[in-house]
Image (cartoon, rainbow, N blue to C red; front, side, top):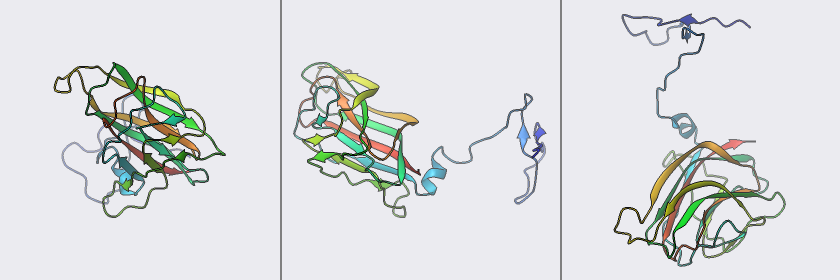
Amino acid sequence: MLVQKQVGPVTTTSSLAAGAAINGRLGNMGEDIVSELHGRYYETTYRRAMFTGATQAVVATATAVGPVAATTGVPVLYNPIGNINNVVLTKVAVGFILAPAAPLVYGIATGYNGSTAVSGTLTSVTPKNRFIGLGATPTAQMYFSAAITLPTAPTADIILGAVDTGAVTTAPAGAFNLYDLEGSIILPPGGYACIYTSAAMVASSLLASFQWEEVPL
């Protein structure tokens, strides 16, 4: 099928009427010319496929050291075995409200086990659809508790930042950051992602959130 488009503007003096049938536009090198009418995630959110989960309160347990199967004090996003969707991470936010005992690096760790589920103290973080009040219920699960057991130890995936030991009233000490993952991590059914810290973060200090899209397999 031959698709022909026009190089340069279709009109230069006025806006086109609604419903007009026109040629698509090309640049001088033959590239398609497009522009964003809405925000970046509008289409996915409008189709009720964008979700988020955020910790509502800190957990009174220090974080485990490094990515390990026996996670403590960090949230876990889990795509359950048998799910009909892939879970595609779009954003993550991490905040520390107390200074650590030692400088540390924090990031995202991921893992997969297609036969054994996540277990332990599975205190659910209730995720919601980003189409507020009207969206579908998410199929992914998010947990945040003192002790979650991952079936296979995760590995470090992305380093997000570092926290030092200064007082939390000083700018370099704490961290609260929102990171755009751009859909670069996909959790198939049996996959999971969690926050990890390279050293133990003191109890009652970590808050975090995940945002993800659910895409049929």
